[in-house]
Image (cartoon, rainbow, N blue to C red):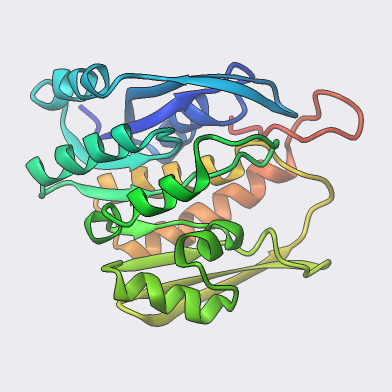
Length: 255
């Protein structure tokens, strides 16, 4: 069977982000996706209206049900929603230290709306940082996690908190003609990429990128190559994104 990525993520009814983005992206990477659902959200492609989190017990029961059934090689997390769920994931990862882990630190959805109490989530996320093979924050999330506005200082602060590798995504920065991503490993900048900034906003691009990386890691790619492969794939996916409503956020066309 294909190597499996176990995703801890929430259900997005629009299918643009969350569980569906994980399944489609990991499938495109060549791996298989398994899911431990962290929350049911109320949202469409344009806006988040609310969510109801899965209990800690149910979340762990979902994950443990597939551990001995599927060839899991990597864990990926997106929206966790509550500090209890973050603590549950910490516990799960500590029990399975051989799994690689891609942490997409979802704090606020691009479509607007809180996905949990920001201050308490940031504090809880710090326990996950040392357990991650790779952390994939956008610059808004990076600044929030580090409580630091300067991006370089913020990145180095996460390394001081135990991070091993960080992919800083530059889509939220004021660079009108391009987007710059930067990959740091053990505090050192090892690769950066620039791609043309496409017109409009995209719903689920961060989920898609992190999940594709996890899929490639599950198949044995070296981290730098997995990131580069994912960035190339995502740019093509966004070029063909679909627009649900005029002037609204676009949904990546992952297939």
